[in-house]
Image 1 (cartoon, rainbow, N blue to C red):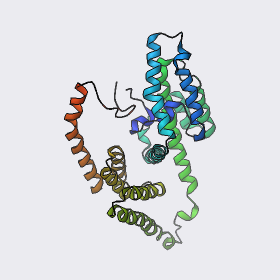
Image 2: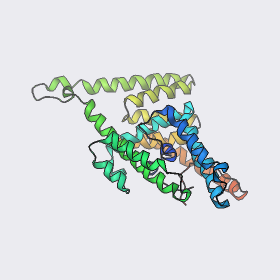
Image 3: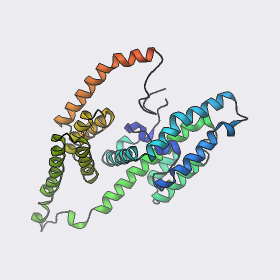
Image 4: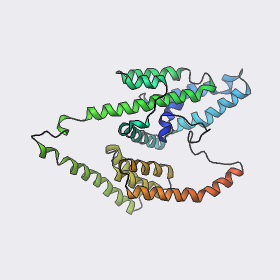
Length: 296
């Protein structure tokens, strides 16, 4: 499968870019967008097309469009994707160097003073004829993904500034007033972790995971929450999510022992599974590891 830029460089499949669906749009409208694309790629709409074009349309629909639609509409996957987007937004805000805008539209969006309107306009402009020339679909997805990454980064930065009140900054004459904030923050995180550990002790991993997902939604830079969530996902045999949260924990705490342990176990597990996977490939099988995780 092709490798795309933008959010794909951050190890996330950009389902919105595949569908040409704005991150700022009402999620309820994603079905309408999907049906438009499905009709455009349906054999009845391609009666005059060559066999090669029909094959390309079929591949686009089955391997990219359908999975993206399912990911954005199925409750469980949609929630996980939403959390993942928030994590990547935080990553872009704290490490903007990860974003390398190549398209002119993305570069323009980086400097615009009217973020929402210009982002929506740029996405709609590309999405309008995204599937008209099937040989250029990947290029359109690349550009859309860059726009999404810029939008997330700038939206996160603006939100952070707006959310910070004057009281959050200690004044020279009031040094003691700001001091209790950090212990309170840590106490809240510790309460989440404590409840999650109680659920895990009872082998109620789904409740433990939910507890930590809520913790991360409120405190996205908590390395301890990310690392413990990674370990829970590993126990639940959800290796992809375990890998994501272990990596995120190390972004905020490069010496986090639990995250390193999870990564080591994932590496050992992958190495153990490699021979079986290779054998399956020789038989003509193989697993789809992610829409855009493989290079050409």
